[in-house]
Image (cartoon, each protein chain N blue to C red):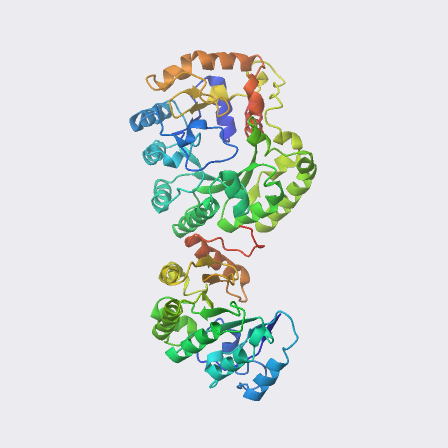
Length: 349
Length: 245
């Protein structure tokens, strides 16, 4: 059985979340043009303290959680609680994935990741060229810092003879970088990344819409993907580029996830409410990043109780079992939906 | 257009990664020194050519030429308004760089009647940090004198308030010296002026610490060694088009 089989079984048997997705802070040191986190440059208020984060990890682990994602909203490494949080995740035997802009991946942080056996680091790099990345990320010098830290992480990993953390370059596809896919693959290989992954942009605000692929960029997308795949093959780096050969995949927000072919769980457009728990910096729960912060708070409530009895999660689950996603589910990434469809396919009729 | 006028194919050390060191006859003939008349006539032959970058070396160590200073001064004295060459570059191992020679190079770099960036760069091939490593890689126990000479060159350039020539300290990453790349970078970075750390040909407008790829029979392995060493100091280890990475 692979992990998807295990998750499918968890969903069918009604256990706790397989994955917890934690957003330690909304604060950020960059100013990305496509970011939706409005309070990222104000002093954080009402964020969970370290003891609360550790309690959530412990309780989720007690429920059988096997994977923890530590990521955004803001930059997770800006949280003073991030080191203890990551330590606890590994101490409880969970697989750990960190998503970071990489600018704060300093020597002590890298040493921590290597010491505790952290599993995967996703670094947000939005262009193969400094001027592309820095313009999108709103900070001159961000590219140089992130790439430098990625190089060092790979070298230090190799020096210890480790295979982890795996290094993944994560790129939000925009009109600013669609012509750099081949160079991104080469950059990935050069820094020693294990994969280069694209994700589609969600565009609400005018500055985000301005970054969406226009007709010209969409028309050349398949060609750029082909170039990127060829470059990736040449340099030996894995990518998810093939998924983006279809323009439809880039149109987040325009297509609701389809219901499955069966009934009940097999009808669910998405199974995340049954196996995935996201927790925002202020403690509010949801089944994913798209719906982040919509549910009740875990600040004073045990994870098990909330997972079993949250009116919000119950409502979502009921809708999914009827084959009906929420309106906002149209904003979901194809990278996630592929995963959800694969789990659904393993649920027995 | 680069024009290499090789003052000599002799060398005073024996770098183990250098083809000159591997052969008794670098050009299929006994090592020689260029005579002054050949140098003078060759320089005259540059007149009328456009955008010439003159390099007084190829396989040998140019400062070994007994009249190196005279040759260089002559070239610059006859280059008023850059009629012979637009740019000038020197590659040297810095073993023979006494104070007088430093002043010669800085004098011509700041000479009047020429465009200010005529003397572009001096490329110091150093390739090691520790003395034992230097001796291993360069085939000569000259580490101390080389470091002293390069540091003196940098000090005198600063004292004279010159921005040219820029200085590149080069390090061919290879078996035997990978462990001290970080020490090399840390030593030179604060001594250079606004330096870049690069794995590709250095820019001609900035000082640089240049971690260079080792050209050898097992190129894949050499590339892997180079990549690992570059990453360890936070440097992307590849050649790339201008502006990329």
